[in-house]
Amino acid sequence: MPKSATADQQANNQQVLQLVSSLLDAFDRPLVVTDRSGKILFTNFHAQERLNAKGLSAKPDLNLFVDILHSDRQQILQQLEAGEQELNMPIDFASEVQRARVRWLPEPDWLVTYLEPAPQEAPADEAEMRQTVQELMQEREITYRNLLAAYLRLQEVNRQKTVFLASAAHELKTPLAVMKGYYDLLLTGSLGKLDDRQRDILLESKESCDRLIRLVSMFLNYSALESGKLILQLRENDLRDCVKDLTCRWQDAFQRAKVRLDIQIHPELGPFKFDYQKVQQCVANFLDNALKHTPAQGCVTLIAEPHFWERRISEAAPSSDRRRGGRNRPNSVLVSVSDTGSGIAAEFHQEIFEEFVRVDPSSSGMGLGLAITKRLIQAHRGKVWVDSVVGHGSSFSFLLPTNAE
Ligand code: ADP
Image (cartoon, rainbow, N blue to C red):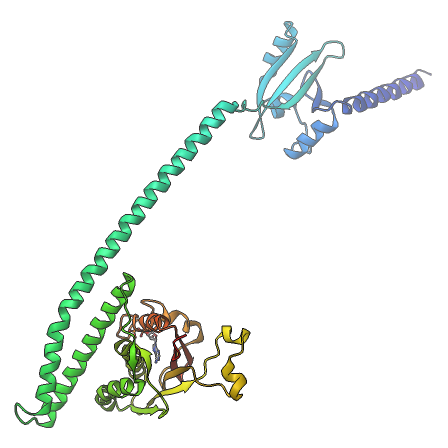
């Protein structure tokens, strides 16, 4: 008999505990119920979630004082038993600051603890926020002005540097022209007969002098382009003269390098308006590069011929030329310099037309020739490009419109 009474009692207790447990779940904040030793009796759903998140739920012998409050048990109990209704204390809950509010229920001798997030810092009021935003905007304005001032200073320094280099280059022009004149005079033999060795040395020196003259003129053109001072001398000129005149001056250099120079100038090339010197400089840049990058026994071919250049505009409105003859009348000239040299990898075909770009930095040159050529040709409303295959050679071309549209 007494045995079954005890069993009933236990079943009752179990029911009460389950009831309390489900009642606790009805609270929407984390609740932990312990006995006075700190042993956990109940946790509601929210507390369980917290303990899970902090990795404490699986801890054996989880204890309120040791694991959650990190406080002295005796002290807390003393305060509560002395009549303190609730202890409100900050706790370091797995490196997160929270608050614990601990109450004592004397009858079952339980401790009920609420866990709640630490109160947030009160948000700055609107006026304060507005002031902060204003301060930030002022700071931004100051930074922007400082940056602008620094940029303008840099631009000025850059301009001064270009002016300085341009005047230095300009100063070099006259002595170089004098030297070149004397080389030519000596080479004519009018100042005395030259033996082969003397002639060779003079020719080599003259070529170096020519190279310097080209570099100086290239730099002067570059600085003129940089400062927006490029003025084209557009006159009715004959491209055949322009190219022939230039190639005559290059024959010696090609012969000495044992590279064949083939020149194919179309007989139908008529006169049109272009800047003689500037176009000559563009062709010279192509020849200079071709010679530099073509080994002995190689060949460089210069072609100048009339060309029909179909710009996009003319696609939209077919020209009367085409309707009339059915054949596209040339409206431009095509100049190309092809070599059997080292060639250029496709990824550099655009880049080499930028300033100071050199595919092989060990080769001589400033990486300016093609950039200048591009700008000069574009100033003539033309276009310039390269076709090249590594190991087979390169072909640099430009188109110049011959009709003054
Ligand atoms: P650079 O004065 O250095 O020759 P350029 O602007 O004329 O400057 O040429 C840019 C680079 O393009 C050169 O450094 C070279 O690497 C490459 N290049 C130009 N022409 C040729 C060519 N015919 N064959 C191979 N590489 C070339």
